[in-house]
Each structure stands twice: as structure tokens, then as C-alpha cells.
Length: 239
Ligand code: UDP
Image (tube, rainbow, N blue to C red; front, side, top):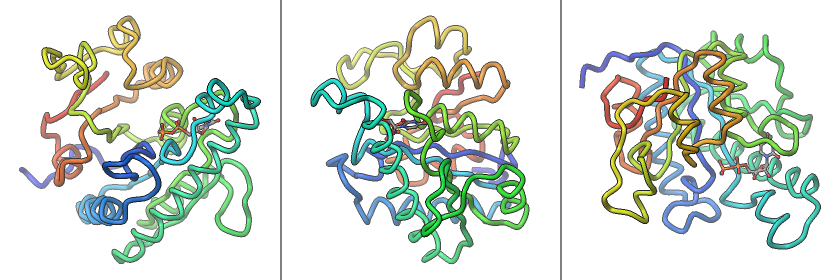
């Protein structure tokens, strides 16, 4: 590993499931603390870090709407609030690692965090603070993947690192088909054409339009976050 970061400003997107560990539900302290420590190592390389966390370890709007007959908008707000729980847990873990952080929410929750204000977010990053973006885009019918691209565009991040539990983008679901082949690099056009489930089409379209590459990598493997930031081709780059 060269130890030189490939990008100076990144957005790290983590699904809620990753923070839930092997069960994929709730918060696994060991996993949260390990990831926090890896984020500390990336920060020590001089990288500005914005983080978007999902909420799927607690609640997913679309699932609640389909399976329980909930109103989709209400369900999506519950999902967005789930991301706030994850953001606060991650903030706490990062601060225990000695990092300065801020949580910025897409809608106001004044007792626990700041509202998202673009200029203020950039200022935090310039001061070396890690900024955790909570509550997705603040609107129903969107995903936290789309929120990650939106925030990356707003803070002028050079890349979106999407940490998942698979090693990158495959031509088929590798959990279901062991013959699935991983792409080292794939174009946005191809990713959209193949209807890859790794990110939704809204997120892919916006990152294509804003020309922000997305690196999909396996964050459940210790050390992979730093390796990815240093440009090791361990995942898939969509560009
Ligand atoms: N959500 C939303 N708008 C957003 C982002 C998220 O309504 O801009 C809701 C939606 O219900 C979603 C839930 O929050 O299912 C949790 O986010 P997501 O499913 O993206 O989390 P992940 O799968 O990454 O854990």
C-alpha cells in the first residue's frame, strides 16, 4: 500500500446493514468501532471525509409499505429517522477515536444535530471535522445512496465510496450465483443498462451527470477502507 490517498475529499456511504454486523439488524458495537478506527486512519492521511449512513438496519420505507401496508411517505420518514440513529452512533464512536465530528440532518432535529447547510458543511471539512450527513435527502421516495451523491456534489467530493458486504459490482448476484464475475471498472451507462441493484438508478444518474465516480467495495473486510482510499483496485469503480 502506498499510503498516499487517491482523493482529497470523499463521501463514504455505508448501508445500515453494514453497521448491524452479521445480523444486519441494530448496531454491532464491534463493527461500528472498527469502522470508526478505519475512518480515523483515512483522516490521518489528510482526507476530508463526509459520511452518509443508511437506515436499513432499523427500517426501510419501501419494505414497510409493501409488507405492512403502511403509507409510503410515513414509512420513508421513519426510515430517514433511522439514519439519524446510525449517524449519532457513528459520531459517538468517531469521537471516542479522538476525531472532531458534526452530524448534519436534512431536516431540523435541533436537540441532537445541526441542519444541513452547504457552506457550513464545507467549512467543517476545511477545519478537519468529519461530517456525517443524516436523514437522507430529507424527502420520501429517495434512498440514502441518492443522498450520498447529492451531498458529494454539494461538498465537491471527488468520489463516493460505497461500503457494502460484497467485493464490488458483479454481473449477477454473487450471493446467489458463485459463477458471478466482478467488474473492476464499469461505465455508468452499462451499470444503468444492467439495472444493477448495487445502487438505484436515481443515484447512478446523478453521479453520472455530476461526473463523480463511485467505488463499490467490501467494507466488512478490515483494512479495505484505507486500501480503497489509497487506490488499490479491490472493488469496482463506476465512472
Ligand atoms: N429514505 C427516504 N429518503 C431519503 C433517504 C432515505 O425516504 O432521501 C428512507 C427510505 O424509507 C429508506 C430508509 O430511509 O428505505 C433507509 O434508507 P436506505 O434504505 O437508503 O438505507 P440503507 O439500505 O443504505 O441502509
